[in-house]
Length: 428
Image 1 (tube, rainbow, N blue to C red):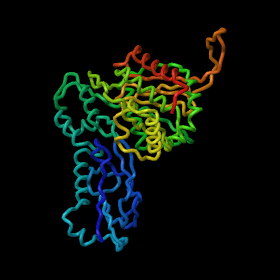
Image 2: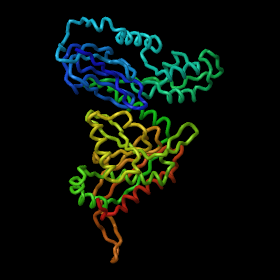
Image 3: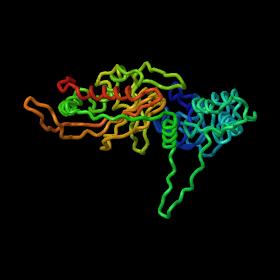
Image 4: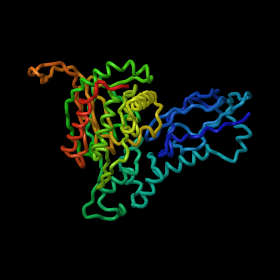
């Protein structure tokens, strides 16, 4: 009999720890390879972790809600034919003599964190920055966080410091003390006998915090155009079956929208940007995020990297793969980070138009509406005629700190022109 150590997996280059949100098995349970052991949550994505081996789960070192560094031993699995469930609770001789005691380490770690930050977790970077800026633990508790479960991130601390007034100890008297980020008094909420209270889940809280932050930091402006996409509709209707047979991918309108947006972003680099204080960061890559609605009602935005370098087949394959895995909670953190621009499809819900909130730290987001048949006036050699055309609304919300109406309007018009001028004889 041997033991297999289950480690906290690395979920992306920028992820150094994860929270265990659920265990699907108990100590003593027999498990097979690929059985789901536990679920973890990072600031980017939730993931289910399968067992790499067959055996019996002999030890669980970290309970639910533990924050575990990448590479730490999370559990032990007894492997081999002799592995049997041990429900007596006693440790094996090997465990008793093991010099490593991860369970005690976990308890000590939990106690240490409890002393330092009460009920909130702070990363080593945030704690170090707080010490350097003479932010007391009590003051740190008052800073709103945009991370998982309200966790304070580096940018939250920088935003707080930018409005704190002075970077001196809290005890230092000030002639005009200010209390930035103090929550407004909560208005009393009346409840009726038939009202029902539904607690937000973790992801919904993250989305709410992200949207509030974006609305607060970026002055939003929205421009709207109506595009005649008749050529695109006729082309797609004609080639979609052949496309699926040839490439094994379902062809929707979204890959064409992504293709047009990628081309427009290269022509208008100021829209493919971020704001960092008084600096404008022009992004070198065109990475387009696509909002995907999940079965649980939440939203996630996987990213198609280097969208401007992919052809239509590549964009379609990437989009379908990311969307399918997003709905199944199979995305890695790296697949939902690094976006430079986002698209959300209101048309999938038969909505004509929308005014989306910018996905920070980006500076713009495009909303695509439903495609509908409409009467339109067209010029003909014999005069004007009313004909039926396929039309849709495109709306662009942009950060008015760096994107003004002229730039936002020109960028949106370029996207519409590319769609209207789509070649209906294009080969697949």
